[in-house]
Length: 438
Image (cartoon, rainbow, N blue to C red; front, side, top):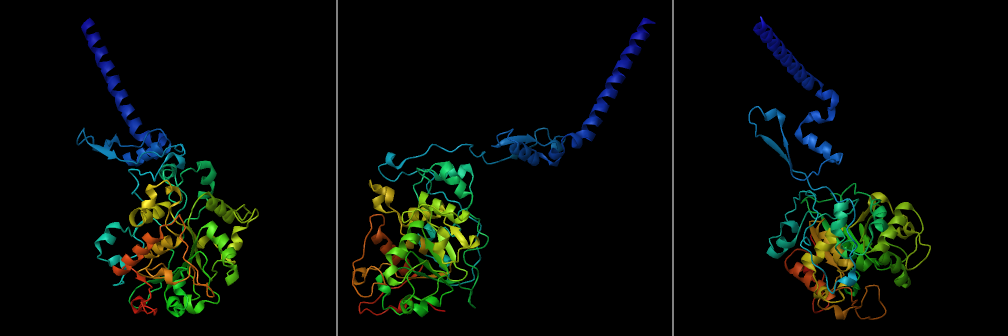
């Protein structure tokens, strides 16, 4: 009898264990959605959930996929996530600590966007077979700024202005960066002829344009870019009167009316629907943008009570205001205009001209580009500005720009048929090779 009792007890205990295990399994499978609803979508969603809640470092970790364990106990799904953005800004770098332009191993890494548009223009500069140009040209480089994360801030903090945020504190500038509107439409909307080509003119201020009578030719382009002191009134016959895109810094837009006032220049171009593009040269430009976006008065070099919105002739509109990305500016310098002066103690102030940045902006948004009023080999024959009619002035070479390097580049791009540079022949007549087809 004792043996039967023991056997009965053992069978009873085993039966209870089996019933308990089965009930636990059913509870687990039927209650998962109730207890942890968001995690029911699969291993990748689980990873994303934990990353969002900051419970895991989302850097190269492995999650087991329960749906595949039956087939293979070793079956896994690898979820590769970018490293979490740093939570704090890197220490501020100071220019005084570098005797020449510092170079970093990520110097030539740039943000790029999806292709902007597919061109059907047979003459498009993007179809160029020039090896040097193709090697250096990035057609999808990110052109414009908007808000950025901490990782981007820390990367760009290594580069001098206007190529980054060196010597600028995060808290001083980031509130303004967050206000920069994300472009809602391309800088240039499609406006092409039967051949599908988008033709642009970039008009500089060189004295070579005085007496050129190119105004009608310039205005015949689909879009016209200008920069700095774009004096138009009274000079239409030579430079046209159309402006589609105006490129500036806070310094150039405030000082140009003072410098060119005697030539009738009072404000930046104000064509209806014009696009304004800003070069973020330094802290002064971010202060300018803060005043512009918040519609408040600020202190500038020319006034302690400046109202930025008044410098756009009533045409300022946030939806038509763009800020060039530091990556784009750095790319122009690194790949096309790396001046030897950057290896000197004066490296801090050296950068391409506003005209150079404008020309490259056009090269990245147009099919064909014609450059007018840029420096050519015979620059000494002409005044510094085309508006200087009654006096022959010398061209001024400012220390912060390598004008001769830019001059050689424009000629090289012209000879390579990347752009058309307006030049005059030895007889002083207009060069017929620069006339674009329309």
